Length: 294
Image (tube, rainbow, N blue to C red; front, side, top):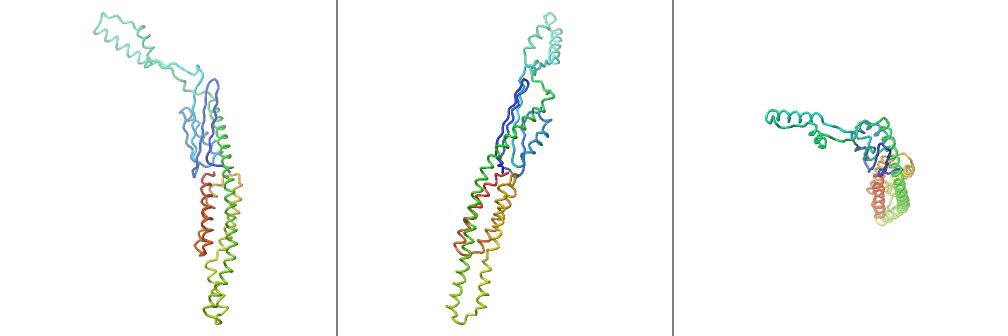
């Protein structure tokens, strides 16, 4: 069993790149992958998503990929010669027309312009070498492995809690089964006593049994208890499954809750209703936990 909450981080560093990948996840009904990455990683987006889908099957996944180029050999100088030519040409034209005796040294002006960041830029090379994609995917894969381990560790804790809740629920079912048998016996004795008090020797035994059977049938919860026992067995089976079971657990708890509600609506004894309240409380605790199960 795995949780949908986890965190994984991986960093790769060589003479050319520093790649940082962070992945975090929270519970979500379906798989929702959100990528935050620089544009040079865009060509590898589909491969990254596929890699994540192979391991992470449910949850909202937020992945942050940052790239830094480390070596000075990855820098390049960009001189905006078109702007320089345009500027010098207009200056020369203006001087020739209005200041013919003015001296103008293009070389000196170019030296000044080269110190201006509007005309000269030092940038990182945009092209990535042929190993770039391999490095990105390898780093993402290791980060995914880390978050998967984190989700597994958290899932084991949830499994322990759910197993304890399951045992508590089984105890409540057993308590309810024991009370129902005693209740039916007591109910029959009280019913017979009241009829004898009212009618004396005129009681028709066959009619008495028929009326008693009808009353007991209306409040019969044996079928619901049988289905609850089946659901509990299925719950214990799912709790030890290695593959994702969150959706199935959610559906199963809904079915168990439906049976418990039926028991409560059929039963009038306060003792049964008290047990039903406890069972519903326990199912709600289980439901809260499985909302975070993959």
